Image (cartoon, rainbow, N blue to C red; front, side):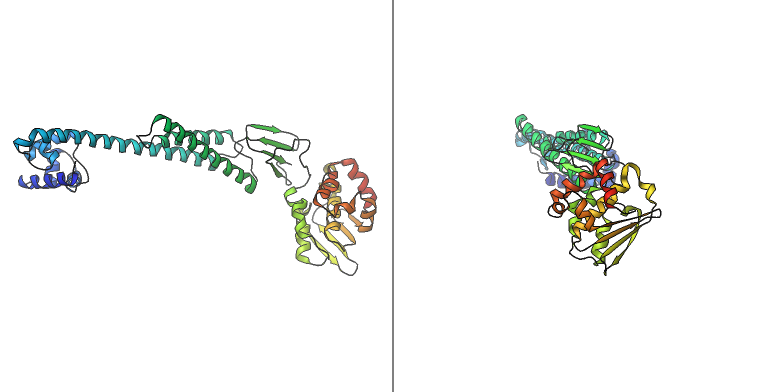
Length: 380
């Protein structure tokens, strides 16, 4: 069916009847834009308008669909062809309309996923429910966009689309946990303990340590090798104060203010504010914290922090001989000589990250060890 030819025929017959596009549109009860669209070959009149249109133009429906006046000899043959062409045209229009509907369904599903990821908090179960619902809806739209697909092909396309979509959502969720330090959306089990929350997902586990405190940190267990008993625990923010970060500030000599400042800034207690002084003659470091010592001494937090900071500084800056920690309440001084003599396995700590975690980080969780060691090492 040649739409352009039909459009030119409508325009020609309209002019023979001495009608403008506006006048023809008014008689038919439609807009002049619709008439213009026909005559430009961009569309055909609806079936409900064809008979009235043909009466006005003094032509037959067969003439209209042929794009010319049909003579009597070819009338039947042309009529049959036009009927077939009309059916094909109608089917094509229905197919295009359905395709648009299914595209909109797919877009709606993808929009639902976007809303679930941007509006709902990561710990809300509604976020995961709505994102999965959105994926199901978008999958349904996707497999029905092409009408000619067989049922079996639709099944395979649907499974593939769903798996790819689910994988992308899991990767996006994992990136959010790793980069933004947030709970995973797709956790099927959440366990809350005294100082940690465990999120179990199909692909990995997430441990949220010291939750809702200044020292909160996340451990993403992709190998699922940890339990609540074996996961690395620290009373501090391990992302800042752990050896993986502190090792960047290792130095042979004290006096590089930028390096020394970055090291102290990543150690516990820095969150309360501080300034520091360096005595290069006697290789002494003095750190003045802007807080009273008793204010932060719940569960041996002060002792744990000072012990951790001392061993970290002595092991990472080789030539420091003495450190003094000043608070508005008291001062605490420690020497490297005492640390080397009295702190268990100090020399091993210097040599590897694993030993740092084993002999310092893990020991810090033992209150009895902290209390006894602190008394031996520090001068108050």
